[in-house]
Length: 217
Image (cartoon, rainbow, N blue to C red; front, side, top):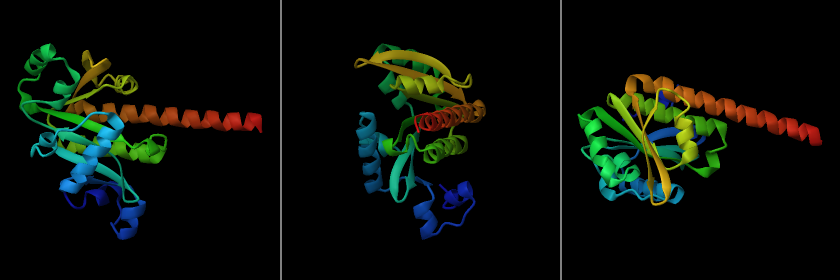
């Protein structure tokens, strides 16, 4: 990743002050950072990340930081075997899915997407993580994008835009799983639609809270 990435996102010169105060995006490569990423993701998502996946040279691991703390992240993965398929589809369904994805090198998967619980209701930081994902997806992904989840609320969020298509549902270890597909040329608009929905919902909730406080005051 270019060293000026954070500056291009925010349009500011990077200094020790801005590095601490302004959220920033970083591609994680050092062993200590990779270990922190893996442990934090497993803590919040309940799914381990194999070391071989973290160290796969075809995968890019990105983390978002605020006040020197890792607050979220995601992985853009590529390869003959995809974590999205292996984790979110039963074995009998994997063959047909891989056939659907041929040629496999035209696909990039978004995996291990997480946010710290402390920022999930923090509109600005939450928005930053989604914008960081959108930026990296447009910059580094192939023609087709694949992403999955075992969170039904997140699956509903992915489903609000026609730009993401639900191509597979399953049940893995008692949890419903969902796999989505999107074309890169459509994904920018799709993720912006998701972000717009999230912002509108957040502002509506905040407005409702203010009205309730006024009512009981």
